[in-house]
Amino acid sequence: MHIDILLEWSATLLGLLFIYGLIERKVWAWPFGTLSAALSVALFLRAGLYAESGLYFVYVLMGFYGWRQWYAGSSSEGIELISLPPKLQFLALLGIPIALLLGYALNTLPGVSYAYFDAFTTVFGLWATWQEAKRIRTAFHYWIPLNIVSVILYGVKGLWVYAALMVIYSAMSVVGFIRWRK
Image 1 (cartoon, helix red, strand yellow):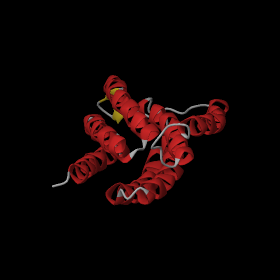
Image 2 (tube, rainbow, N blue to C red; image 1 turned 90 degrees about the vertical axis):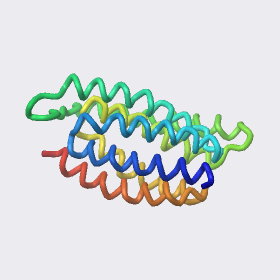
Image 3 (cartoon, rainbow, N blue to C red; image 1 turned 180 degrees about the horizontal axis):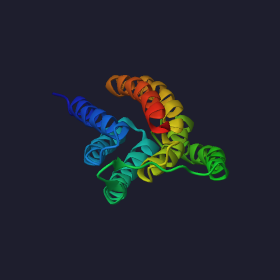
Image 4 (cartoon, rainbow, N blue to C red; image 1 turned 135 degrees about the vertical axis):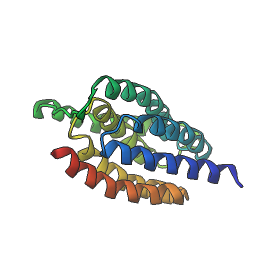
C-alpha cells in the first residue's frame, strides 16, 4: 500500500474518533486527535502543504494541551463548556491580516501550493483549536467554514480521503455547534 494512502486513511479514522469524542465532550478524544495530527504532518509535508503541515504539528502540541485542560476540567457530570466574551471573539479579525502576511511569505518558498488557502486554514485553525482546548462554546463557529475551505484545498491537491473527511467534519461541526450551544 502506498504510504500516502496509509497515512491519509489512518489519520482520517483517528480524526473521526476525535471529532465524535469532542462533540460528546469526552476526554478520551484528545489522544486520537493528537495521533491523527501527527500522521497528518507527514502527509502534508509529502504533499507540499507546508503551512498545513506546520498547523498539524501545532495540533499535536495542542492535543497534549487540550487533553490536559479537559482532564483537569472534567467532573462526574462531564466536561463543562465556557463562553468567551464577544469582545474577545473580535480578536479573530486579527487573523485576516495575519493570514494574508503568512500567505505572502509562503508564496516565496519553493514547492508551495495554494499559499493563501493554506495560510487561512492555518491561522483560523489555530484559533478554533485553542477554543476547543479551552472548552469554549464557539469553537465550532470557526470549524464549519474552515472545514468547507479545507474540502477545496485537499480536493485540488488530490487528497480525496481528506477532502471527504472535511465534508464529514463540516457536517459534524454543525452537530457540534448545536450540541455545544446547550
